[in-house]
Amino acid sequence: MTIELEQHINPKLISILEKISDPEIPVLSIMDMGVVRYAQIVDDVAQIKITPTYSGCPAMDVIGDDIIAAFKDKDIKAEVDLILSPAWTTDWITPRGRKALEEYGIAAPLDEEADKEALLGNKKIVKCPQCGSIHTKMVSQFGSTACKALFQCEDCLEPFDYFKCLK
Image (tube, rainbow, N blue to C red; front, side, top):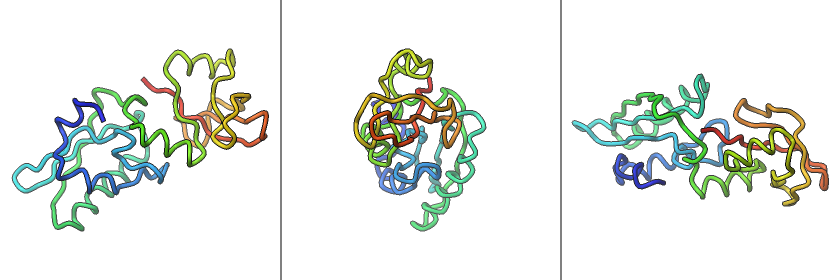
């Protein structure tokens, strides 16, 4: 988490928010993904603001419903607002989230410059989450979701998703 993010999240709400999984990548919490931008109690209501990973992300409705349900389980009323600015970036994925991605079989995003090199096929730098090899190739610009590309390892031959760098 960045310092800026911590200033806008009530520490008492973090334990609830960390238990809410990203519906598309269930090993990540919405906190690991960095989509929670604001969480405060205002007049006994948890006010939560979330940012989609990309415009039109279908998971945001599910995440909003999951937040409301999680707080209801704790007898806390919650309201969820979607905010679009600033736009979400893969920089907001926590180190714990990046590690969980790799363990789940999804290559974590590279930095912006390296991402371009990998997606254009100029460099073999996307690490296979199965065997750790960088002898990988892009099979498709799009993987299981629009924010991922499909890669294949040339050593272990396993296909895997690479989470694209989004800025």
